[in-house]
Amino acid sequence: MSDSAAPVKLFEKKERIFPKRVWGKYRKIKWVVMAITLAIYYLAPFLRWDRGPHAPDQAILIDMPARRAYFFFIEIWPQEVYYLTGILILAAVALFFVTSLFGRVWCGYACPQTVWTDLFVWVERIVQGDRAARMKLKKAPWSFDKLWKMAVTHSLWLLIGLLTGGAWVFYFNDAPTLIEHILHLDVPMSVLGWIIALTFSTYLMAGFAREQVCTYMCPYSRFQSAMFDKDTLIITYDEDRGEPRGKHKKGESWEGRGHCIDCTACVQVCPMGIDIRDGLQMECIACGLCVDACNNIMDKVELPRGLIRYDTTHNQDQRRAGEVEKTVQTHILRPRTFWYMTILSVVGLVMLVSLVNRAPVELHALHDRNPLYVTLSDGTVRNGYNVKVLNKTYEDKYFRLHVEGLDGASVRAQGAGNVQIDHLHVFADSVGHFRVFVTAPKQSKAREDFRFVLEEVVTNGAEAGEQAVYDTHFASRSQ
Image 1 (cartoon, rainbow, N blue to C red):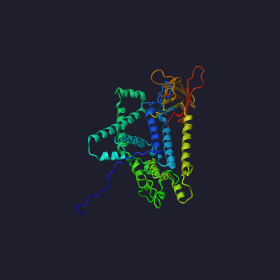
Image 2: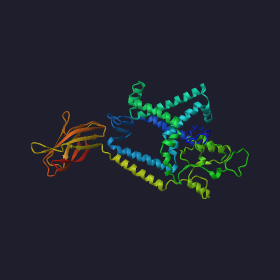
Image 3: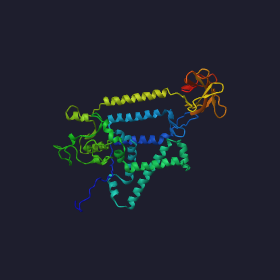
Image 4: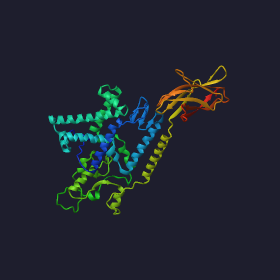
């Protein structure tokens, strides 16, 4: 190899994508979805939900200090993390179900990366102009015009990022109270740290990374095709109708040529920068903007719409064989979607039944491990337990605790103040911790099973209160 030979480039520099403005059916849908999702994200923390005097009234709140998660009428405790597991399973399977039906529409319309990128591109277009103007500005030398446009663009991006980070921390704090603290510049460092981190992550991901997040960082683009089948609705280019492509002048005949005039409008509007005419690609997020662009061109050259459209592989094959008309047909119920719907139904039903039968009061008892038991001077044996009473209601309650299945047993509680075993006080929406001792004659077996029974103390002739039981054991001799 001579010294004058050009160096070998192992990697090509990533070219920045400047999507062109387009208007049409799917662009309108994207605007509507973006408005709805952003409204939900920014306004949801301010919704109120009355849970009583002893609970927060924010409808959606993850209260980390109190170890609680609130979602309208649902409250999740740390012991109920299985609800979170169920929600994640439902979300994943629902995504698979939608993908098997409509392809990657989640990515194209509702994914946060897509929504915020659309918002950033809109700001960029407002300040700098459409595609051609932005490309020209990027290549232009630095001047006052370029400086102020770039400064305004990035300032607005940072402002959106700040609002995004600020809205996120509202889900973990009482929103009106936190706003008051922010206005008085009295923000806790932990909250301020999250706001700063999310501000710059939003600024980076939606302002610079954009399509690279969808292609390289998001694993969904890598395995999405595993959920596709011949009846999945995807963005397609009709090669039979479009090829051979070529430029066209008004008045020329279409005889012997395809309807694609090679205007590259579909490429110019694509936020991922791909050419859908090359077939379905991993980068395609099924946003439909290329469909709008192509339909607009077809209208101008007075040809039928649908050269690029949502379609299925099955329809394409049948259409080539002349078995179906040119209308798009979808088959929703098929083996893949049936199993997805079955999993969604089963998991959803299990969670619903669990929520309906959720006990408002729970009892847990942990037996002492060292020592297992203590023999008293009168020959009886004493065991110690750490008892927890979970009061999931929004009212303070009193309980009595006794044992069943252990002959001659007596129970007493120990703690600060006058703790009475038949009058245990547990605050609303909290956990009561009690040190409990059970004393009984030495049993015939080394380990005798029994149960703690917790009953709510009711007054004024009220109906029977809440009850809870917990099975444990009593040790009275070595194994």
